[in-house]
View: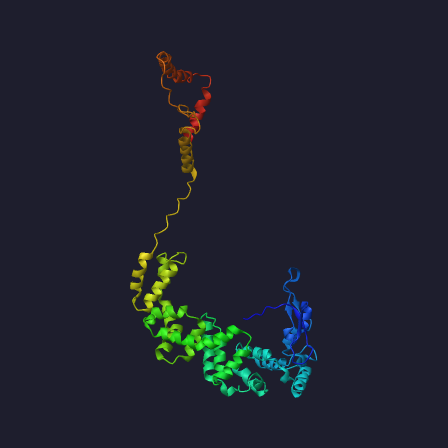
Length: 429
């Protein structure tokens, strides 16, 4: 996808073929100066109406009807390059011109308004050919309408390398399916002008406004020769080195070299890069790597997977057993076992009571030494004076006979009937 960023403007033509006078304008005024209704639509970017379609000339209806319609009667008079653009759009979309647009088109061609076209407009139309999906078809239609001589007097379809152009477009499609997105514009221009002399090509390059396209076009063959030389050197002595070299190369260079390579070794390596070597990636034992806990979550996973792939390419891992033997040292240790489930019932209550007892036996933080929290069985304080142990000795036997007195008090006859009934009930149970 290509985009052009410019301000909303209006254009006023004082003379046929002369550059317009440009001034800032609103978006509606900008749409009025466009060439065709299908190009006179816009989407609002304002926060309150973002995404709203602005179509003051009903271009959506013309798209649905597959028609090309100019906005006003003087469209081809003000800008004669619209004659070439109308032919290019009609050939690209296979759409006809609307009836009145066709009449104005024929009138402008009869009056030879095309002779007022500017060099900048010619360069723009030459540049657009590089981005067409089927540039050879567009070129043939332009030649049929006699517009190709307007772009360059020596340019014809006979000057095109049709075979190389067809292979280029086919290889680009294969690369797109593999996830590559090369820009074929410079290579397309190379094949469209393959049989023109260097002076004619230089004259055309001077007219193209996009200078980076011109630079890429000029340097295309030199860069391809450098890549071919590297592919035949020790830098690409093994399949793994060749894979690394082509992976780091620009997709545009690989695309052009795949079509123009004359050395069989270079062409075969590029072919293997797109076909044979990619099938080796399927031999990486991903399920076994998961069992070994070698997963994408590991920071070292990309390097491990790449090392396995490189060894498979070079034939150093010939079986699954050898591959697993190589992977086992990279297996991380197993994760710790999960904590036991919480206890329930009596065991939970006993554990809670033991924890409370242990916590109560500990000294309270923040208090002075020698003081402790009162527990169920606190240890007796150590004797400090000699006179105090005497009253403690009778205190112990005083506690022992207390339960004996209670045992003597139990056999009294006052509550005699009730305990007997309870004993009977307990026996029945």
